[in-house]
Image (cartoon, rainbow, N blue to C red):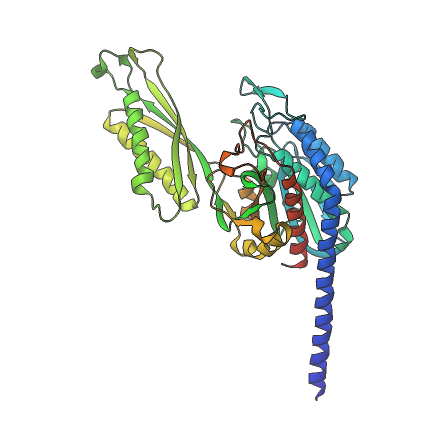
Length: 437
C-alpha cells in the first residue's frame, strides 16, 4: 500500500473520530436541554401566571419588558432595552464559534375583558382609542414570553456547550397599533434587532387552541396570510329620501360595491393557486330615515398567501369600486393600508427540523397543518433570514378542539402542560441548528 493510500486512510480515521466526537457533543447538549428544561417548568408557569395577571397593550409593555430584562441580565446576557419602544434584545455567546440563531416572543395583550375563572385572571382595565376596556392575554403572548425566558435560562446554563450565538428577541405590539403609532417586528428590525450579530435563522412559536396540549403544528412555505386594510368612501349627492332622483344615493352604490367585491373572489381570482379573502367588516352612512346622505364608508380586510395575488387584489378592489361608483354617478376614494406580509416558512429548513420536532414532542404529536388566514408580523423576520414559525397546542386533551374557545376569545384557556413542550422545542431547535441540522 502506497504512502498516499495510508495518508488517506489516516485522514479518514481522524475525520470519523471528529464526527463521532461532534455527535457525542450534540447528544450531550440535547440531554442537558431536557434536564434543565424540566427544572425550568415551574418557573415558566409562574412567569406566565404573573404576566397573565398583569397584561399590557402594544407599546405599553413596560412591566413585562422590565421583568424580562431583569431576568436576562441575571443570566449574564448582553441586554438591550427600549427597542421599538418596549422591546428587549439579548445576546448569549456560546463557548465555541458557530452560527447565530434568533428566537422571538411577542409580549402584548389585547383589549379584551377576561371571562376565564382563574385565580390569576386579569382584572386590568385601560383606555383604548377613547374607550375603557379590559386587557387580557387572549392570544397567549404571556406564554410566549414565559417560554422564551425559560429557554434563555436553559441555554445560558449550558453556554460552554454551545457552538454559536443565540439572540433572544422580546417584541412589543404584534397585535397592531392605533394609527400614528409604530412598533412591532418591523420597527425592531429598523432599530437594529437583527444586527451585531445578524442571525442565520429565526424560530418562533405561537400557542393555539386548534391543537391539543403536547402537539406541535408546522407547515412549509406560505403558512399565515398577509393582512391589508381597505377603506372605500363613496361620495354621492345628498337629497330628501322622498326625492331620490334629485341626488346620488351613496347607500345603494355602496351596497352594489359590497356585492361587486364578492365577484373578485368568486369569479376573478385563480382559486386553485392559493386561497384569498376579501371581507367588508363595517358600513357607515346616514343618520336619519328620510335623508339620503352625502357619503358612505366601507371598511374591510384583504388576506392572501401569495404576494402577487395580494397586489392583484388591491388593483381589482380599486377598479371594481371605481367602476360601480361611476355607473351610479358617484365617486369613490379607495385607501389600502398594507399590513403584515405573508408568513413564509423556509421549506428546506422546515424539512430539516421535523426530526427535531418528532424527538421533542413524539412522532404522533407532530402535525402537518393547513394554512391559516390570520396574520403575523413574524413575517418581517422571515423576510430577512430563513426561519420557521410553529404552533404549539394548549387545549386540554379532554376538550373537543372544535369547541375550544379560540385565540382572541375572552374565554381563551391555556393548558399549561403545553408550555414545556414549546420551551423544549425552541431550545432543541437552537441546539440542533448550532450543531448543524
